[in-house]
Image (tube, rainbow, N blue to C red):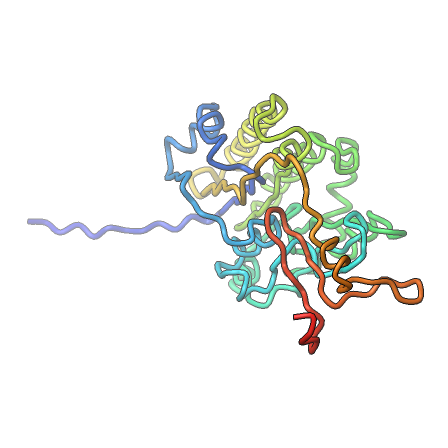
Length: 304
């Protein structure tokens, strides 16, 4: 009998498309659309993936990029702990230096592979070669300057000059259309070994209209078109046979009917109080969706 030795052929290009808030409740609808259906037919798929805890975007994306749980990589929330600061004025974990372990894009660069990131969370000031990080100006900061300082300046300027007219701030569907155009251009001109991109249209729609709205169904249709455009770019770049697509969701959502403001309870107990016109805390909740972290002032045994 003649023995046949199986050969494993490694793909040269990996395109990671983060489909923010894509979860099992919309799998049936999305999987019937032509472009995702083609990838499913020719690849492997599962809608049983369990996310890490807490299921917040920046936490999950850092696990995707590192392969370890939040207790190891250090991103435990979208935001660092910032008591008494309004949500819209808070810093997020925008920068790579907050991650305590190596990322896949760091390892790729060490192995002389080219990398690209488009609005990938926690990638500001990272080793990504072609990088438009997900970052937002707060207070009196300049948005364009902050992106240039945190990403790849020449690449950011090039993409902005070509496709900036598409975007209207962070408004959807324009932001994801801009991200997709940047990805198509990058695939055709740079042919990166690793491209990681973050599409947010579905997450925004679920937040604004609820998980079972007509607007959400419209986004899922738009998303399939974007996936198709990226697939076509890979084909036109001549790298189709050497490319793997990895499309994944980071978390689901549930409809919010009411909110519980836990810090009001602590204030009633005197653990949050005002002193000389300044708010102080001995215990403080940092909320994260349907859960919260309780912070206690170090050494305050009575508060604990």
